[in-house]
Length: 363
Image 1 (tube, helix red, strand yellow):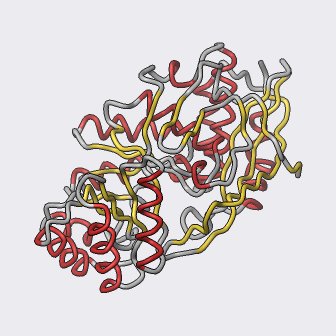
Image 2 (spheres, helix red, strand yellow; image 1 turned 90 degrees about the vertical axis):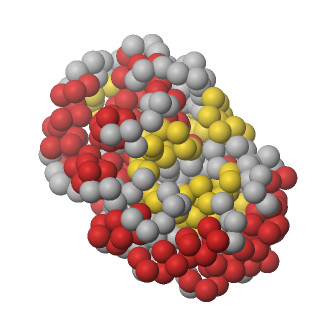
């Protein structure tokens, strides 16, 4: 099974409610779909959102990187030679993590089809059912409380609360949500680099003194402020998780060995795909550090790949944040992973298990 061509399409899914963080507001999931064709008639699917303020990638830059740099080197390569293909993808250009990720996902999809097995089984196997949290966007206190209660009605029992706009208002948001839902529902705080180290210590100690039990605080300070993360971790009991600070295996080693964080958030768009995500999970296991599997605001193609990885590495990936498809008004992908509110179910079809993708806009 040889690679013959790569083409692109766009997939747009309106959100149920606008997605708001301290960094942006989005109303649609917009994925660039990467379709790798082979001489055997099989195709592999990958995807990536545009995340210029996180990874630096746009849909235009992803297409250019794949078309001008990667495709000429990959054309004619055999899918069974997975390691050689991954080496080409990872070594042919620096950065461009989303471009590498989208292409890797399509390659791994084809690799699963070549072996006629679901990807998670080839990566190690496991229980093919996961349970995810759901994101509550930053908004007015009343709206965030209302959204939290609605999520609980939909059987979500872990809420990921987006904050990071103003420390005083953020504290009031958390207090109001906790008062409304109590301690039976877990709360994860995602600050999106919105606080200083001292503000984080103040807020975490305040929540602890108030009996507000937080499962974790995610990326409270700037991505490059590793000293700030360590300052926080040394002074609070609440676990601190790195997100934007943790792109590569090398960064993860530095974060863990410096005791700067307690948890690593793995996202395929940051790691450049599945191959480096596997390395990060294995590193974390060696150091007995938990991982979360997360996603950007993206649809079920990319999130399906993350789910396959999470199942195969469930001994270290203990926290699931794969709610992207659940935030959309519909899922245009059929035959792949099933996203039913908090429950994620992997099927037994080869690769990512994708059958049909409705609404593709060819580019």
